[in-house]
Image (tube, rainbow, N blue to C red):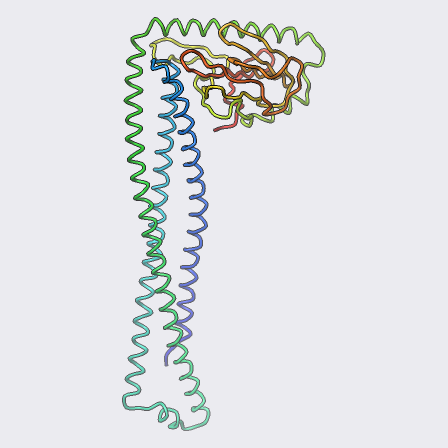
Length: 396
């Protein structure tokens, strides 16, 4: 006798496994895809910003360190985009592999279902050749046997119907999964083409960088003079800040505990002082990008940005200094308890000494020099100790 229940249960178990595979893959894929797409959008935004800054520094048609810094930032941004594309391509490959597992399983089950169905049809055909269903029923020796044979025929008919439905369901799902595989392959091919274009652009940027470094290397005297001027400007700024700190230390209530706790809680969370830009000069002792064996000592970080960019407060505080400093243009100091944030190389200032300001409140606009370089000098101090601002700003 045909055991319809066994086959049906087997199919149900298999279907559950397939559904779990598909559902699990879909949830995981959606989450990872969302992360990769965000990463790609962020990288494209950085590239757009970097391109704008690079264009501004190249307007004078003169090789400068600012132009080199902008070019290096563009290269980093392009490299990050290519790495993001690599991750996306690898993810798509894993997606395709997972879907293919489902496809292979569905194909195997569809084959089994069709073989079982063919066997059922053939058995029914053989049975009907010389033995009618009525004869089968009325040859029963007892009423109970007649009832059992009727029940069997109903079960057998239902099994054939279920088997046909199962074949249809699996066939539809198989087609759907194959379409999904093709869609992923098309997407992967598109990404590979984009990646090839990005690699070409990156190669072009690196060629530009090498040419620019060669050109700058011929200006050793001029570059050394720039290094010396910057060193003097930073020293003057340090003196100005140290003098303010000494004077304020003699005043009462300059280190408010609540302000300290509020500022300290924002480590790696401070908003950037400019909307667009990148770290062009890192904190501490750094090698010169062109001159060999020459180092610079930075009290904070340089943030290269767009001409006319607004500068805003990274956290709420009180303006304790608005001054001019040789080589650093206009300077603003904001106190946050024992902590200080300094904004130098400003063209215009929108605040006054003693003014209370909030996070993201405007302070001024960035200064742009004759070479087209718009670079904010941003520092963070605690008392008379200089801190690395990159450890305070939110990661871009």
